[in-house]
Image (tube, rainbow, N blue to C red):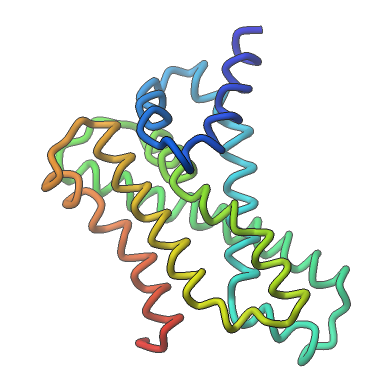
Length: 196
C-alpha cells in the first residue's frame, strides 16, 4: 500500500519536474529500495516516451512516409520500437556517463540513482512527443530545429539542476560532474545544425 502511494507521487513528480524541479530532485535523494521500486514504472514510461520523441524528432522520420512509402501504422510501429530501443540504450549509456561524471568529482551514489536522475531530466523530451507526432503528420518535421534545440537545452539544464540539488554541490563541482554527460546533447545539437 505504501509503495502504491509512493508510486503515484512519482508519477505526479514526472509532470512537476517541468515547473518545479528542485523539490522533485530533493525527493530523488531517497534511493532506498522502496523508493527506487516506486520510481520504476514512471522511469520506464519517461524513457520510452523520450525515446519515441527522439526518433520522431530526427530528419529521417520525415522521410519515412514520402521516401520509404510506409503507412501510418508502420511509422507508428517503427517509432515505438525504435524509440523504446533508443530510449533504453541512452538511459543506460548516458546514465553511465552521469554516474561516471558524479563519481569523478566524489559522488558516492549508485548507478541506479544516476539513471533515475537522468530519466527525470529528460521529461521535456518525453513531453515534446505530441509536437513531433503532429510535425510528422503535417510533414513539417525539418522546420523545427529551434524546438529541438530548446528541448535539449531544457533537459540539459534539468540534469545540471538535478545534480546540484541531489548532492548540494557548488556550481563548479556540479558543472564538472555534468561535463561528461552533456557531451551527448552537445553532439546532437551540432549534428542538427550541420556542424558535424
